[in-house]
Each structure stands twice: as structure tokens, then as C-alpha cells.
Length: 511
Image (cartoon, rainbow, N blue to C red; front, side):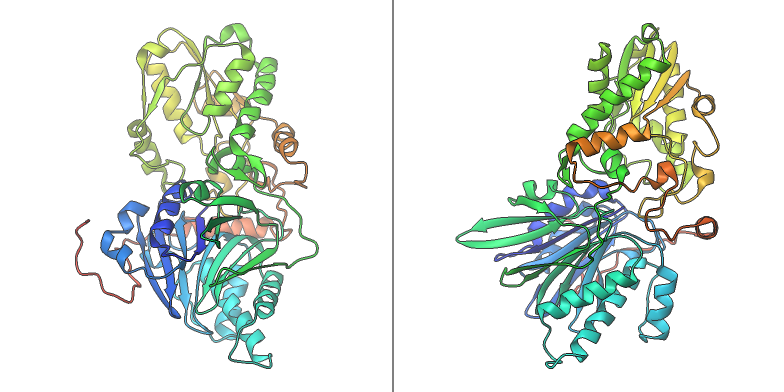
């Protein structure tokens, strides 16, 4: 999972892009990058780490221009440890293009062979995003060479290139790219798996536009949300602010990722016209109904969230069950998400640094913990042990999401079935594995209905990690086994920041 952002304005965008990335930090903490454009030139800085670690004042000063794109990276494909994997990526031909991508392609190897053998283009990394960029550049070149004006790029040529690109790509993608001297193009996969929305700002009679992974970005930079970008829709914004749109696939359907609503998106975001906060409140109600059938309510003394994502669901669940709601686990906000951290040992070590119990809230009580999801079970087991050590008599745990039984191949880093606590286990066996007295999971159909009630235009979901149904139709047992083998062989590399600015860094002090 990653976060993308693009702006075309009438004023410098470097600070706006930085501020917007801060609002997307939850979508990726591995790397960050910004590329801006002015006078047909790109200015780019990117590196490993969180946004505040990658960018210093001197870097920001060198990001010239009134248009640009930005990215925060959460590693799902490619070498997670290499600074060269940071986005945006850049190619110089034709016209010069920088591109940032959220999602995961499922036919990367096939495309990479075409890029190197047919298009005679060189790929520098193992990232599917760089492959995507080169295929897009190739489609742009084809459109230009076939036109009557081979040195000019028209809006129709850009949209034709996106149409042909989408015929080639499989998987999930939300893409934003800048074409030097022309403007910004953004598009979404035909299933709308990964989110992308359009915003705008009116100032002095001029309109500035932006695209972002989540609507919360626009609130922070003085823009307003216009709408979600439709599945398979492409948007092109000229550098003067002129907006063009095109539907690139006639059979496109809105089937977003369910895990976005449960876990990844911020609660103050609106995705596909669904309030994330309201969705999570409603998840608490349906989960409460499930709990009534599984646990004697007299056995529950208090309900507590495992912060932070599960808090809305836990509050509404407690209200619906008429049980006390308390905050017994205090989060250290300076520790990153354990789910994002690669390596089981790192995750386990970080849990007790990340959460600390208040013993008085647990002493001699039967506690129902509420989490957004249970993926590998490592964090849940550590938390339950902490709660017992703090004095709890019984510990139940409820998940706002169903059992995660299958790997996700569309941009979430859970690629092997063997890592998943629910793989080949029922709820009772999971409870035993994580040392809980009982474990209750949301029903998948209930979760779907929660979202559809908030937006009846949603036609389905990518629920593959819960159901094993891969909506792109190209995932089979061979693919999953290949993915698992690649995951086991992958070894992160250590590296420092990479600077692709035209200017050269001259120090490391933060101003």
C-alpha cells in the first residue's frame, strides 16, 4: 500500500505536496518522494524514511514549479530495503515523464520482458511501478509517432495511450504522472481496487486541481473534494489548469478493496463516497450482533479498543452492548505500525514499545478487546499476554474484519498463506494460538453490507484476503506458490537516501 498525490496549481506546490504527503504518511513509512516541474524540467528528491526524515529545507527550496507529484511508499513489490525503489520514477523519453503508483501489478514479469526485449528499455529496479512507467512511455511514443504532428502530444493521444496501457495491465493501480511541458495525468484500474480522488481550489478566479489517494489530503492543503475518480477513468490536467477526462474501459466496475475501509484509510477520509468513520461505526454494530451469539454478555465487564484504527468500531460496539467503554492500552505514537514492519522478530519486539497497559483498567476484569483485523496474530498474542499480566481474568478479542485466510496480491503485504493466523484454523483454534478465551470475527457478508448501505453504487469488492476470490481472474495456485517462494528469497538491502535533484546536496543539517 502506498499513497500518491499530484497538484497542478498557479502557485508553487512544493510546500503543498510536502503537507499532503504528511497526511498520507499512514499509507507508507518506508520511503517518500516529490517531483516538480518548471520550464520543461523536473526537480526531484526522494529517499528512504518518513516524510519528515527525507525532506529538509534545502531539498524543498530546490523543488521548483507550480505542478508536481508525490509518493509515500509501503513496500509490496520490489526490494523494500533499496533506496532506488523510492518513487516517483523517471524516464527521459518521450518528453520526460515522472510517475508514482499505488497498488500492485500481477503480470509484472510478462511486462518487464516486453519492456526489455521489444521496447529496448532498461529497468533499473525490481519495482512493478518502474515497469508500468516504461510501458506507459512506450504507449505515448506509439501515439506520437503515428500522429501527423510527431513532435506534439495531444490530449487524445494521452488518453489513447492510457487506454492501451490499461489493456496491458493486470492487477490494482492508482497512478499519477507528470509529462514535462504538458501536464499531469492520473488514472485508476478498471475495478477501482485502489482509491483515487479529485480535488480543487479556487483562488483569484483561477482553479487549481489535485489528485490524491485519500480525500483527507485536500482538507489539509486548502482544497475541496470534488469526487472520486471512477474505475478506469483517466484525468489530464494541463499546466494552465484545463481539466480533461476520459473513460478508458467500457466494462469498468466499482469493486474497491475492503481492507481500505477496515484498516488502511484514515477515519477522516471519504473513499468512493463512503465515510470511513461511519463505516467503522457501523462495523461495530454488526460485530456486536455477532458477539451476542457467541459470548454470554454477563461475562464481559469492559470493552477496550486496540488503538487506533479499531476505536470507532469499539465505541459503537460498547454502546450497542450497553457495556462500559474504557481506554486501557496507551499507544506510543513515535513507533511505526507493526503491520508495515518487515520481519516477524521486528514486529514482536516493537509491540511492547508501541502499546502500554494501564493495570488498574484490567485488574480482576473480563475484558473484550476490539481490533480492526487479525492478520498474522503476532501482535494480538503479545497484547493479550500484556493484558493478562496487567491483571485481567478473561480476555476476549473481537475483529471488525473477517478472518484473513488468503494472501493479498493487489498491494497489501501479506503474500504467503503460511504467515496468516487464520490459514487452516477456525476461530476456536485461533483463540488458542493467541491465548484468548474467545475470538470473534466479523461476518464477510455483514461487512460488505455495511459499505454498500453507505454507497449502493458499489458493485462488489476486492475481498480476496477474506474469500480467496481474486477479481482480476488471473490468480491461481501456481501464481500464489511463486509469490510465496519469491517472498522467502527476498533479502532487503541497506542503503542511504537517493537524490535525483538537478542540484546537489551540500549538507545534512535540518534547517
